[in-house]
Amino acid sequence: MENAGSLLSEQLDYYRAIAKEYGDHSIDVPGKDELVNAIMDFKPTGDVLELACGSGKWTPILLKTAETLTAVDGAPEMLSLVKAHLPNTVPTRFIEADLFSWVPDKQYDAIFFGFWISHVPEERFEPFWSMVATALKPGGRVFFCDDNYRPDVELIEGPDSAVVERRLNDGSPYQIIKVPHQAESLEARLRSLDWDITVTSTSGPMYWGVGGR
Image (cartoon, rainbow, N blue to C red):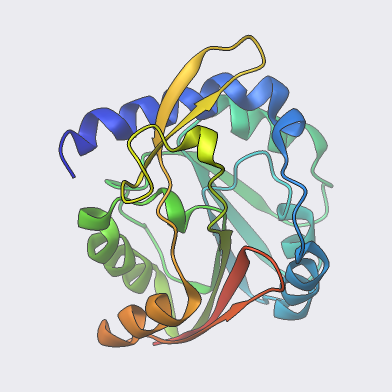
């Protein structure tokens, strides 16, 4: 992808800007209940790492079973949202960092990232998963979820491009990366990278993956 660095910078700007209105932009598609049930069933224990925690929608679920939690995100505005509403029951560490350059300082029993993998450009896919492997303890588990929903209005470069356009409530446009992964091909790609991860589709455009090395 040309100008991936510039796109990633604009993508971060978008998530920093949308933090205050993030709840206004949720999508209403089939499969949400299936996805939530899968996340609830994951039940990570021990030291848990959440990558791209965003507004913290899934973080309270992780805290129900985690012994410690480390939450990483590139947008300080998103981290502020998480900190504002999390229960004070589990030792939690917050890290503001670019996930494409962040180097984990320890290993974790479980790693979770929700609605992030589609924002990873193709040329950063393998390095990203290499970082995940570095952060995961032997025998540890990974869970991720996302969607491949891309309405026509967002496809400013056509359906074959991974670049879409999103707008804030005031109409401000931002170009971001949204790769429309399909469960079967994504699972095969991960297995080629020595991951034993099963990727499951919901009845709608959402999917989740769970497994390990």
